[in-house]
Image (cartoon, rainbow, N blue to C red; front, side, top):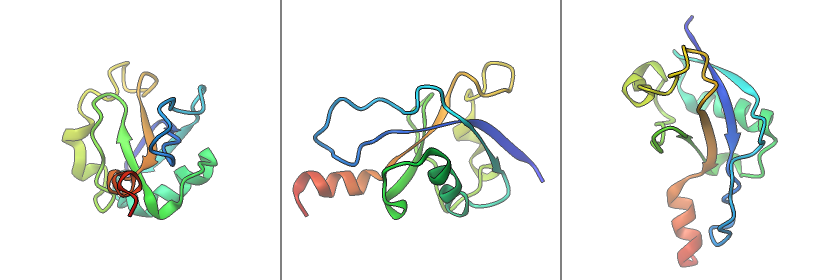
Length: 114
């Protein structure tokens, strides 16, 4: 059972017109992901840990180091290429974080008023 431990934060982008968004909390906690379980089955744990204001069904996970979104239907093991360079500080994940935020499609629909 391989695991991936890193910092996690959320971006309160539930209001797409609020432009003063910064990842929270400023001292991010660590979360340990299982590399062999699809992220869709683990995102609730991240959401609960962060006490994020998002609707769980509207959430996405984004990598802070390159802005890529992770595929929630896939495992971390299947997305190794996306994680390249994420843990540059010797494998401890202190420099970057996985950011819980609103899915892009939900933000777009909020902007156009659908």
